[in-house]
Image (cartoon, rainbow, N blue to C red; front, side, top):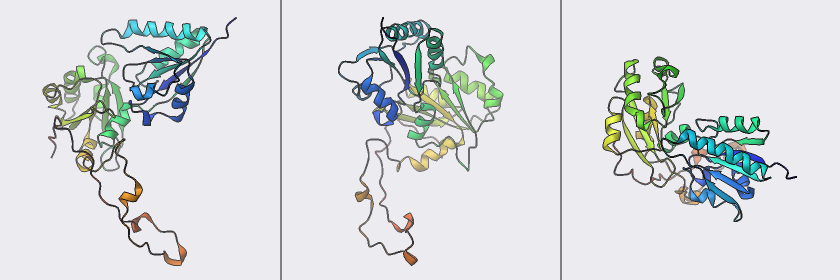
Length: 298
C-alpha cells in the first residue's frame, strides 16, 4: 500500500526569486510535484529538480470557483500517490490566496500539510514603489482589503471604517477601482487623498501610477493599467516623491566598495567603535521612472 504524501502550501512572494524564503527554496528543490499559479516567474520554477512534475493551475478571470475545485482534487490525488507536493502560490498562501480553503480541504481528507509564509504584495508592492504603508509622521494604521468582489459584497465591507484608516491597500481591485473610489469618497475620504497603483511589482515590467482618489480610476484607464496591480490610498503615498530616485531595487546591487570613499577613518576616542556617520557614502540613483508613470502630487 502506497504511503500518503504531504502537501506544502508555499508562498512565492511577489514573484522575484530573491524574495522567496529559504524554506520555500528548499522545498522547491526537493518536491516531486509543483502545482503553481499564474504569477510565478520562470526563475522560481527553475529551482525545481529536473524530474519534478510541474502543473500549471493558474486561474483565468471568471473561472476562479471551478478551477479551485480542480486544484483541490489534484492536491488530494497527488498526495495519495505518495508524492511530496508543493502548492506554489503568489504572495502569502493565507492572504487572499485561498490557502485557507485548500488547507481545510486537505484536513477534511486526512492529508498532512505544512504552510510556508510568503511576502505579500500588500506590503511588497508599496515598498517597491517607495511607499511606506506606515510612517511615524503620516500613517499609524493600515488596512488590507480585497477589491475582487467589492461591488458584489458591499455588505462585508465597512466603507466608513476604511475611510478612517491612514493607509488602505487594495489587492485585486483594478476592475472595481471606480466603485471603490466612489464608496470611499461617499464615506468621507477626500477626493484629494493621494493614491497610487503599482503594477507587476518586482517584475521587469513594473510600473507605478500616482494620482488622487478622485482621479485614480480615470487615470488608470488612460494608462491601461491591468492586473496584477496593487492600489494604495493615503498620505503615505507622498513619501514616494522623496524616495523614488534613490531607492535601489533587486538586480541593481552595488558593491559596498563602490559606495564608500577611500578616505582615512580616524580612531574613535578611547578605542570606541565608530558610528556609521563617520563613513561618507556616494549617492546612487536608480533607473529613471518608466515613461508611462504619471506623477500628479505636488
